[in-house]
Length: 286
Image (tube, rainbow, N blue to C red; front, side, top):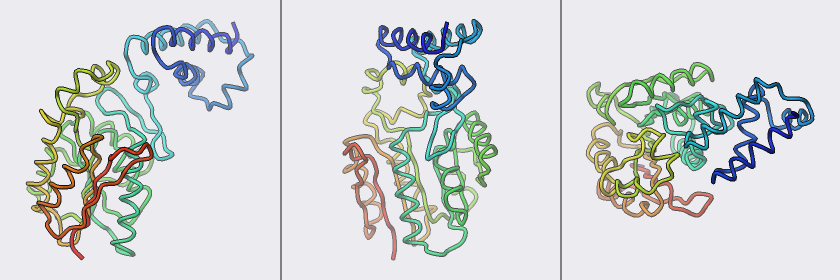
């Protein structure tokens, strides 16, 4: 059997089971040794060994059974870099790249030329946000916090592999900073924001496989934002930046929360490339 024949089978099998046929390419590239798409295309007419074909079959069946492709391959790209992922962490999404990009722009505008701007990413996960910010701006002092030690270990591995200088803290939301008396210039977070009643109707690939602690935002989806409003004033400096990712339709509510908490702040909702109100930012102080 040739590579292209195995790929055709995989695409057809996935489509027949209501999965994205394009996942076949990702799984094939993984089976061939995590090769690039160009390399895979150059090998389409090469024979595929029985061992590799069986590996592809097993990977395709795992995806049909509801396992995300990223957990099967153990990787996902974010901001031009490849991050290791597993069942202990939320799979990084493209929308979060936009959160990071805009926050980096805000930092350059509001803290120009300042060294060691203290940035905290709350909810470490794979380390996508904290590692990216540390690599994109070497003048930042980047902290990140997660309540799950398992997630921190995944993120530590990504920071080590990619050469990022990030300080990892184990704890609940901003409590580690409150307890240690650490003041922050910037807080950025993609917290759990899905209302509990909506989780039940999510695709099984998400609700049954990705960690629930990274998804559930409580009854109405705003539990973590409410807690942030209590804790942010305890750690932020007089001049500070806050950036949140939010669920579509939540932007105005989270913006109102920030405005109530920081009355003089410039608060605004930013829409993502798909036109959804996906980010909320606050510029606090002059």
